[in-house]
Amino acid sequence: MNKLVWSIGASDCTGGGGIQADLHTFKDLGADGCSVISAVTAQNSATVSLVESVSEQMFTDQLACLTADMQAKVIKIGLITSVKHVQILAEKLAEFKQTWAVPPFVIYDPVAVALTGEKMAEEGLVELIRTALLPCIDLLTANAGEVLTLSGHALISGESLKPAALKLISLGCQSVLIKGGDFELVDKIALDYWTDGKREIALSSARLTRMESHGTGGILASAIGATIALGYFIEDALVVAKAYLNQELKAAKKLGFYGIAHLGWPTNKTDFPEVVLPESKIGYELDLPGTLEAGPGFASCGTLKLGLYPVLDSVEWLDKVLKLGVKTLQLRIKDKQPEQVEQQIIEAIALGRKYNARLFINDYWQLAIKHQAYGVHLGQEDMDVADLPMIADAGLRLGLSTHGYYEILRAQQLKPSYIALGHIFPTQTKQMPSDPQGLSRLGKYAQLLSDIPTVAIGGINLERATTVWKTGVGSIAVVSAITHADSPKIAIESFNQVIQ
Ligand SMILES: Cc1ncc(COP(=O)(O)OP(=O)(O)O)c(N)n1
Ligand SMILES: Cc1ncsc1CCOP(=O)(O)O
Ligand SMILES: [Mg+2]
Image 1 (tube, helix red, strand yellow):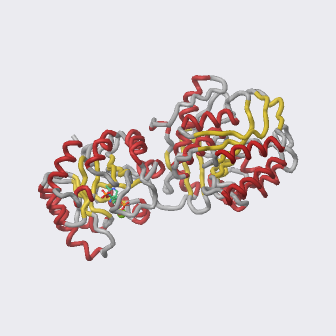
Image 2: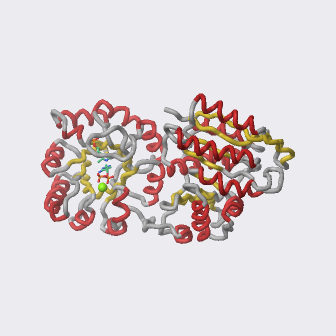
Image 3: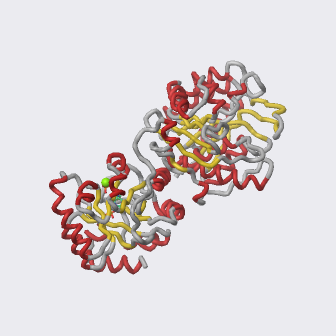
């Protein structure tokens, strides 16, 4: 897999920022890195004493040499001090996007654009960045000063973030992350806001500072780049990068000057940000769309380990597996009108009660409430339309599907009864819009969710069950491994031997 990130920017002799910190971050997160140096800086914590741009020829040749060897999956741009370099870059990025088999994802962290006229930037640079560079950018990561310089919008309140980001998008970049590292809209909270003009994401973390804070924005952008190069969606990359930076900032406190600990992939749940829900104080201030709100949570399943979890499409199948001792199961009937499934739901619930089993109803949450089911399972799209407080008030358990870090953190805020993680392997049972996540990601998610029941789903069969179980996940959900088995009885017994 190509997981190459190019860092285009300046050398920072402290190693705390610039190309040095970028390459270190890529490697630390498991991506590969190359660099194109635009300028060399002599600086320390007190001053930037000299900045020298490299020649146009040197800048162009570095790009040409790298292109000849291997195209980048992600290009991360940092400090660019020369008008000529911006022109070359804009031309080259347009060419890469048109001619490469896989167009690169381009991130721009507009270091020092707020310092025009000083050592870091030539006259006319900002205007050219606005008109020529921004249209080539997939993700602009900007702090308050950079937002002001590039968009003319001052960030004075939560409400001011969205118009500023939309202004930047109107200049041509595909999406914007406004970083809250250098301004505080909410007491003691570092709030990051992302939008592509359609979706919006806000992430909050306790504000952390370090002795020498230059370079943190670049590290965040590099961590996003590395994570995207590894194949994560943008929303997951934002979450992982913020967790990575939090981890670094905490450790750097102990390291002192320029301290960047580079502690690898973040796994500690206290480093991960909270997803801001629309119905929350900050959500209102940001005017986030949607109705999700953190309530008191859903009834508990009484155990962290839900064990083998067959997902079945008829009452006959439920009856068969209940007789074989299954204790967690789901009725999943797709694409029928409620009146067509109500009788089966009634019978399923009665069977679940008879066998004292944890029976979840997929999708039909109103019928599940009406007939007092043990629980409901909902997907991401279902969550937007279902009345979650009503499900909680009725005392039903709730299981939620998730497909990555961002959805997991958002689901966690809702305090569901379990979180499903999928799909893990290729599956024939359902058309999935994304690639399978694999065991390594499953292990990372399971580690993060050690205090809530987790369920792995998608393409899990007997051969794969042992490695899945070793990730620490609390349950294995299966469809075809039971319904296509020569003997469902032997299949269930064999799964139960793995899941102890
Ligand atoms: C245990 C479990 N995990 C995931 C799913 C998938 O739910 P959803 O995303 O709502 O998709 P459909 O099942 O409705 O197609 C599930 N059903 N059960
Ligand atoms: C419903 C669902 N959601 C994610 S994968 C999946 C199907 C799992 O079926 P199988 O166990 O046959 O791969
Ligand atoms: Mg569903």
